[in-house]
Image 1 (cartoon, rainbow, N blue to C red):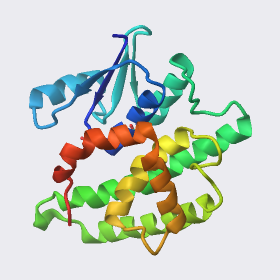
Image 2 (image 1 turned 60 degrees about the vertical axis):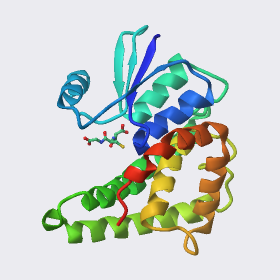
Image 3 (image 1 turned 120 degrees about the vertical axis):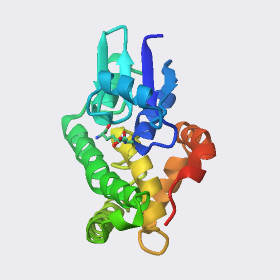
Length: 216
Ligand SMILES: N[C@@H](CCC(=O)N[C@@H](CS)C(=O)NCC(=O)O)C(=O)O
């Protein structure tokens, strides 16, 4: 098979790439990574030294692709399907790319740091850092909520790259800073995203792993 995705079903950034693959029914081989296995980690790092999931190997084009946004742009160009993830219109594409960055950098990243702190031994936890990440996450969520108030998908009428970024970001952000009663429009967008078949499939496949999500 031409495409192989190195991933884990619980990983939020892996969801971001699974969504567009499922959206267009793109054929690929899923290779689940076991980060507890040093040999697997070494093999994965030989592929992509940064060591962040997911990584897509495109044999046909002889390319190893990392970084979710770059992977989705690649799929949109080389493995095009009915759903397009980057609009043809330059202004719209610019807006989509902005919100893709906002969801990754200011929703997912603070959320990840808050969650990762939970799995550290208590003496190595970083309370001030976590408080700062929460503050950033809350400020960003207030901005997201106001922006999506009049939108169906993350940036408007078209389901795009920004939605692929929004879904995992909002799903896990809601777990660490519950949206209910604070950010109703973001919550409504999250519910619409969860109902989309490609997203529902990602969530179904992640379900058996949810018990490993570190709660407070
Ligand atoms: N900027 C990267 C972020 C990817 C990322 O943070 N992946 C996490 C999983 S959600 C990861 O690989 N964590 C394992 C590690 O850091 O060792 C992207 O967009 O692909």
